[in-house]
Image (tube, rainbow, N blue to C red):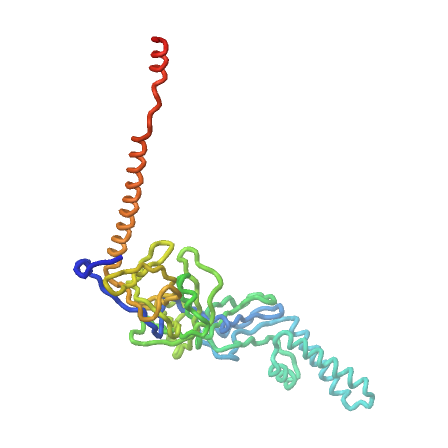
Amino acid sequence: MKISAEKQQLIGVQTGFVESRDVQKAIRTVGQIAYAEPRLAYVTTKFEGYIEDLFVDYTGKLVEKGRPLFSVYSPELVSTQEEYLLALRAQKSLEQSTIGEVTASANTLLESAKWRLRLWDISDKQIAELERAGKITKTLNIYSPIRGYVVEKMALAGLKVMPGMNLYQIADLSTVWVLADVYEYEIPSIKIGQEATITLSYYPGEVFKGRVTYIYPYLTADTRTVKVRVELANSGEKLKPQMYANVELQSGYGKQLTVPEEAVLDAGNEQIVFVAHEGGYFEPRQVELGAKAQDRYIVLSGLSEGEKVVTSGNFLIDSESRLKSALSGMAGMGHGGGEKKESSQQQPQAPDSSHAKHSQHKH
């Protein structure tokens, strides 16, 4: 359709260009600090017994790796220590034997007893101490497997413990996760390994850097979001689980053909852009678009580099284009209706049958 220069000025027509640009998209969302699950440790025993002494008796306490948490008395453990010491004495008394089978049998018994102790997570250091002392210990200390904070404590003095019972949970906070909520339509823009920028209102001016390590395979129905996991180093352990964080993810698409956001008219099942031509002519063009980055869309098809497109006034141009199409259609229908009317007037009418019968009767 053609629009005069005066009318273009009246409706405020402005134009932009279809251009190739290096496209970067920023996704901004919120998330929550969480424990890094591989850095959580449960403390359990593999034998039945009773807690004698608690050395770490409250949650929130920082414990070093190898620090004793509690001592436990176990009749099973006492019995196994006795077996080990007996096997050790037998092995020493028979090591000078000239009968090879006897020596081998003693060594096998000793290794078997040592193996049972190891199955119960008794360390080689503790076994060496048992050998050195040459006597059993009534209780055994259970040590922290990692450096971290006690976040759960179920252990109590005098508590009967069973194999596999969780007695402590310890969290290493040197690395944490941020679980960010990303809308489903933004997920295609996020990739594993992508850099993330984290800021918190608690630490104004501070910026933390992390990377996307996982995109969860399910949707939260209420919010229509997907959890994206960002992992980051927690220097100084400033970041505490359950803190809220602002998350920014940058997606790079490389050099892409783009069109200004203002040029796109969304017509429901299609997207239209008006291309401006010489002489005041405007062409509606159906386009296929990709991701939106800042104030531009990536063009997948329908436009070419350097084409001029309408960025302001396009809604009015579209309305006028539709109005002209409607009026043109109505004019065509009206012209066709006139022909039918004229044809109807020229069609001869059949004589009235009752009048014909009356005439015949009269003659």
